[in-house]
Image 1 (cartoon, rainbow, N blue to C red):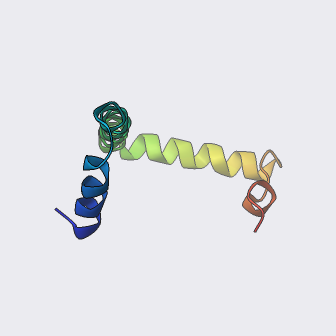
Image 2: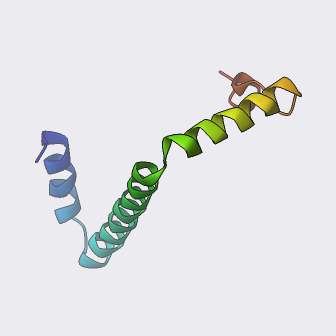
Image 3: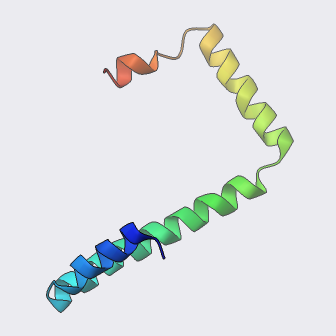
Length: 74
């Protein structure tokens, strides 16, 4: 276990049980979501990645995209 994770657990242990359960539920949901994404990415074929890349290239070429700094300004 990492030092940071141990620090988090130590702090969580100080909370009331209902708050501990709430945090645990959030963490569990996040872990399950990450596992689903990992599975989806691992099962994506090279052909699928190529098709997605081509779709993005087409969107860029016809102006259907905006620069990221417009969406996420510094």
